[in-house]
Amino acid sequence: MHDIEPYYHWIGEYSAAKDPQSPFYGRQYSEFEFSNTIYNYFIHPQWDNFGSKTLYAKILYADYEKHYAIIECIGEWNDCLYNDIMIFKQSVIEILQQHGIHKFILVLENVLSFHASDDCYYEEWLEEVQEEGGWICAINLLEHVERDLQQAHLDDFIHMGTPLNGIPWRTYRPEHFFAQIDQIIQTQRPKMLF
Image (cartoon, rainbow, N blue to C red; front, side, top):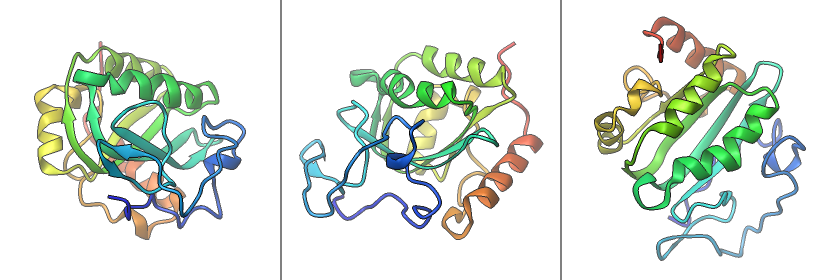
């Protein structure tokens, strides 16, 4: 796992460490010192620790004028033992929301497992973004992770599945990637809580 880096080809356009509105503003990274682990496996030092024991993230791009963020994650998403959604929402998502982000693209191809608990934080997150015309989506999920998310009924709150899986997102500029996702979501049945 130590050689799986967060996507870095957009770093010239956006860096969360240089963005004063980012929860990771001011972070400094080493290419050689591996200190973060998922269980007893070291991960690449470019991933950001936001307080979870098993899940790390990287804000790859945030556009405050168009109100979207692209966030890549790695590890085990464990709501059952560690309440990862609460930590993620409070430490990352809510800070971005305070600065006008209400469309979230979660790249979850490196999330290796998911363990559910209750869905109240997902419901709250969707309610908040819907007030601003926003949405949440997850792309390129591993098949068993998607199945576990669906069994927990989190697809009621997060757009996922076909055609959001299998997108070659690394071939796009961030604005084109967002435009494609936004178009897909606009054509799907909207997630509504009412």
